[in-house]
Length: 387
Image (tube, rainbow, N blue to C red):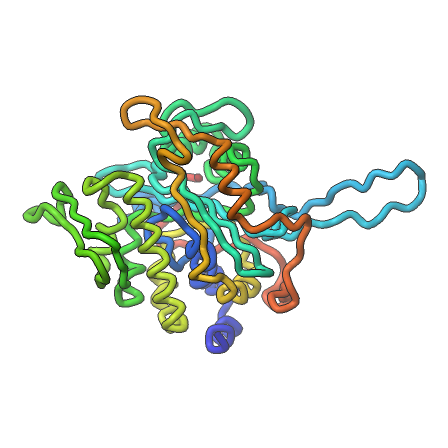
């Protein structure tokens, strides 16, 4: 960690905006449930992305108004006497004292344009204890709550694209929709390009995963000449190509099974990065530059660096909100979430709410990075439509 912090001190602001991803996403994604390994260790800046990016057309979002924006609660008083100083929400922890991030994984590829979010995940971390938990919303959920009122009748993987077309603030409004659905405070978002998994896994020399039973998808086209892909039970080493298949394949079981494999992949990748001591950070920065967008503030990067090692990898709670525990079949392949059961899981496993909780002294905010600002960096490939 000392080497990383020293390197951070030598970086320019623009370089820091990209390097922020070297640590932020491992913190939140290690608890993740269903995002592709694209997100395993990178959160570059919320900068314009190319509209025809061969890696994946990533959007940008108008500056959102997340629930974690600095705010105050009034202190009612029956008299005209001086009132207590109102509590102020931490920029990252919001009013509930935990960092909660919405992770969106897009299925974009040149032959399949658009940004359908086949991976939708919410991750929450308590900086005081390292407790972390996350859940995935299956892509085939229908009638998901809209940001203000009503529901979205089609599959939830199209909701981001619908909100983007309607408001030009797709990510910000997805945060509101998810917050409304589960009665939680969502502080920030991370939007991840689907195909970036290969570059990111390559940057760390592949990852090791372990399966309790064999997996085989007879319908997956590995290339133009080979169909069918699988892994045995036990430990397997995945290169970039295999990691992408591991994250995408679902005909060997289901979309819910795919989500569970993505959990395995994300945690394996996080473990690999942590064991290597972030020696791969420069390669990760380069690989991630065009694959991830976020509104996590650059000014708080130091805090997120420190939070990196507090997450207890072996105690993470994670779930896919699927049948039969949390979802029921609507028709065909569509499902309705049983929101009461989802909320009960969140209440049981998410970090406890600490109203206006602060960061502990060991992870106290550092003023060394400069004034608060959203990460911004230039893009050499041109601008993309807003998100």
